[in-house]
Length: 112
Image 1 (tube, rainbow, N blue to C red):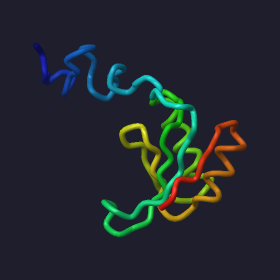
Image 2 (image 1 turned 30 degrees about the horizontal axis):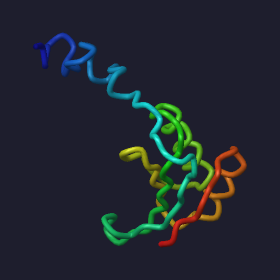
Image 3 (image 1 turned 60 degrees about the horizontal axis):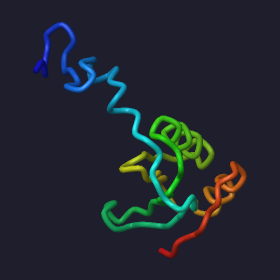
Image 4 (image 1 turned 45 degrees about the horizontal axis):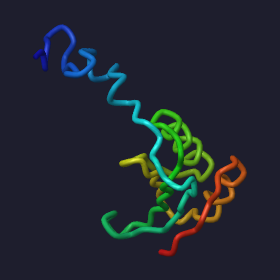
């Protein structure tokens, strides 16, 4: 099993493409759930900083990263997708909820 090549660098063991072009690692299926996006405020595990977590979004990983990017631009802040959860820096709960509703998602604000 080829793991590293001087021609291509790190290689994905599943698809045998360079890690930067790996298709199997990028695309994960949409999470199974009840179709309700839950938005909550978190500080634990983020160095005391406030982040807004939106989980339960019924999108595959590629469209979820695009949605995260658009939400970051909309809020004017940073963020990421981690384990199927969009994390946006700062307390932008109201903005995120209204934008997700505008995009057609069913949203609940979980406590926090």
